[in-house]
Image (cartoon, rainbow, N blue to C red; front, side, top):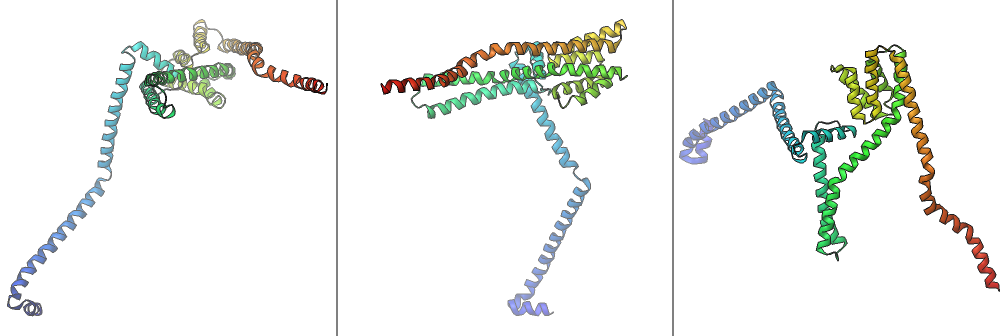
Length: 321
């Protein structure tokens, strides 16, 4: 009654009608707010029960789509830039493995790096030369752009060849040590598989690339390949004939029934002799290689240093006369 009297005083004779309209409207608004709050809480409870299943599934779907797109791109690059020749793809793949790139997408990344390097070198030259050399003609500008783009295209190949040469030198240097450790393990009674695994851990500090390939041999043997086949594959990866000869030696020893430790000892001595021969060859070639720098840089300075005091004395004596 007090509310009715208040509305009557405020709105006059129509105060009761206003009150009758406001009360249902207010109750309806309160009901709507309560319903929305209950719905939001039920949604929160449902998401809490589901956990992260839906976001993880969506994330996995996005990863699967990205992986499929990447695989299509890899296949396109390999097929397009290798001319569709499987032999050429295998050759490039072998070179990349010898360089230390074991990823399955290495061939596509290699071709992609070629294209990217050519584009960067070409566009960079086209944009930089007009600023650095404003007087250059358009013909020379385009010639320099094309030349540097071609250089950028073949730059990854030069890098791969240089990396292969460095790793081959490292493998040749560490292979005699590997053979010595093989002899020690064979005489200690270890099996070849256990010896490979043990030697890989020992060589990881001095020859990390060789240790990596030995560990791959251990993994291939665990996967079911024969020891000889795993060594042959290691010889292809290392790029040296010593590893392939070791696989043939072990196969012949198994077929002929000869002593494995004795065969390994003889082969180890041969590997050490080869390493010593290579070191002596480099030492004998050193004087011939030093002729050019000595003639161009050392001898002129030495001659000037020795003749300068005599020249000063002659000039002084002629000046006094």
